Amino acid sequence: MKVNYNKCCYCGGCVGVCPQNALELQETVLVVDNDKCTNCGICTKFCPMGAIKNE
Image (cartoon, rainbow, N blue to C red; front, top):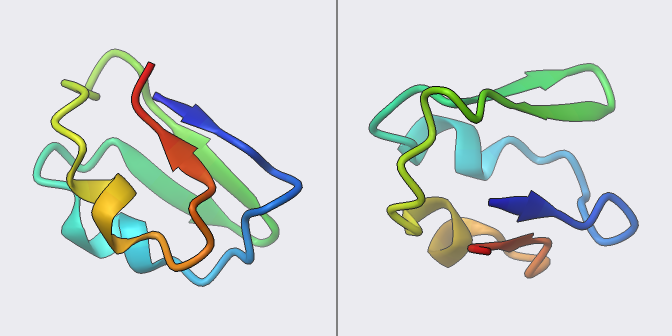
């Protein structure tokens, strides 16, 4: 998964829907734990800014 930090508004909407708990919002940085992420794509559907892409 890739995050476009220029588009991310740091709302945290993706964090709560991740079934693997692979996302964490730390102030103004979205941290992705790639060891936990399974690229399921759920977070991409909940991102209002289109900042998250499965790659």
